[in-house]
Length: 460
Image 1 (cartoon, rainbow, N blue to C red):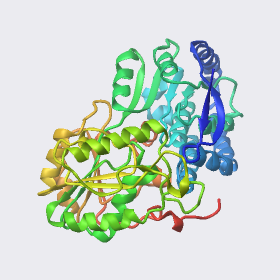
Image 2: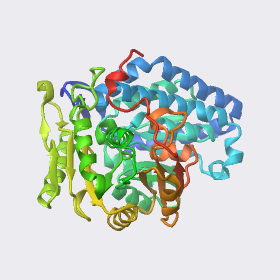
Image 3: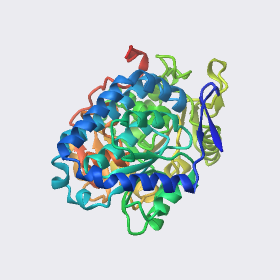
Image 4: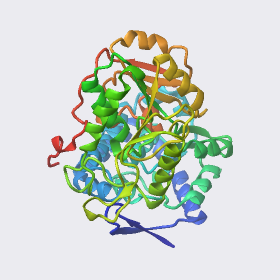
């Protein structure tokens, strides 16, 4: 049986992938087990050299990977390019650390020889690269399962692994049944997963005896204090919430804005978001492409409807539409304000270009509502971004909140570009992120990757 993959903007078929069954999982795990011993015995300097070669091949294939990612995932071209660059950087990162990594991280050195990497539909390239590179650097073989919605780009990335020993990285395609078969397989010693909280908890319950690297989605927060610089905060918030069409699990979640500037903030946000270019992501100037699937569009429309019926005020957008007459899964950039405490956007992730706002009295109230109503997955920390002129005071305010990461004034995201600081399990684990972290920048700095993307439009 085969699954047809289509362009979510144009609905043009892109290719077919097999729906793997249990037999395919058995073969992939067996191949990885066969390769594990020789790969583990390969000197670390040789493993590092092979990882560097993969990074080079990714860069050499960048044009094709960018085009495929854009057409399959609906990412803006510059976001696809960011993904390719981040994927190559992951292999460079672990190539540099391949010798020292086991000594620095004994848990990786002691882990069994085959890891399963389950890849989400949002930013699959850097997540797959981080999971594979991390395991290979530590001397383990890998079995990957690409996302069912957009597997073709992952399969293209896998072709850059051609210099590795046979079986060192195996790939199986298919739906949830394939993922479950990998999770419970006795030959798998570690499971790395990025996705929904419900799926992550289910994996945690079924993958008994295995090492787990789970990153579950949660409803994050962006908090705008009354002394925030709106000239910079508005575009920062807009990009953080709407990057990758708002579908990334790292996207900025729900907004809490101090009441004294809420009206001005929403007015400015309307002007900013209302001028974003929603179109075929193949166009270099496109800011927002389509949602990944029709099901995703229907779910988002339902969530917006339930939010409005509960009393929220619609400022912009709110439904599916057809920009430039395109037949794909497009959703209007949407702003809703006056969302009550406990509303849908606080309890459920809205995976799409929707910004929701709750006016609050101060930072303390915002933190109280966020921690009370937003899901707090037990397997990964939530993230809150705070915008304020008094960064030190904000840092003190969050110290008592356990199991969360706080970014104050959107600090730099580091060497992997705009996707290095995001919360995908492989990337966060790879770069040594703690479960509780406070990052402080004393002032917001305009980032070159913010909207509008027409400013970033350039050839590879």
